[in-house]
Amino acid sequence: MKYKTFRRGVIVLSVLVGGAGLWGVVRAVNGAHEAQPVVPIVAPTPGPAGSSPADTTEHSTAAPLEPYERLLKGRLGQPASSDKIKDALGGGAPKVNIYAEKGVWARAKVDFDRDEHWDQKWWVVDGQIWRAISPDDDEKYQDKELVGSAGSP
Figure 1 (cartoon, helix red, strand yellow):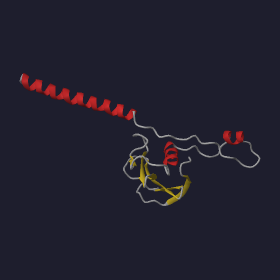
Figure 2 (cartoon, helix red, strand yellow):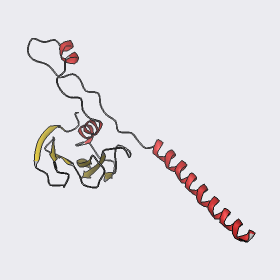
Figure 3 (tube, helix red, strand yellow):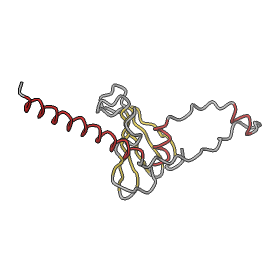
Figure 4 (cartoon, one colour):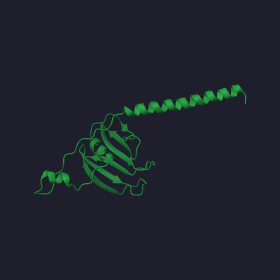
């Protein structure tokens, strides 16, 4: 191999490695500055008659909300700042896309295994948040349930 050929190969390889490193740094810096979703703090719900508030907070029977549930319950029904939030939780599982309609966050899709088949869809109707579940991960939604009120996790 001639020296000139070797030198060109080293230069090309150096440019590629340097470009990839620069791209990684820029991506990390941009990811650090993205706005994190604001999740309001939830007050304890009242328990059965005759129990004190201390009893309900210590012995709550409700399962804690997943981060994607808190995000969607706090965001859906609120004024939108854009048309869409893609991958709202920032690259980890699950993938959550939120969509705006008429200036309000109105619907969302959730993909737990990031296989591009949506496992859940969420939407707002008259201030109520609804969720439909695709049990077979095939985007055929069967179970529809009322999840809560818009803007209150």
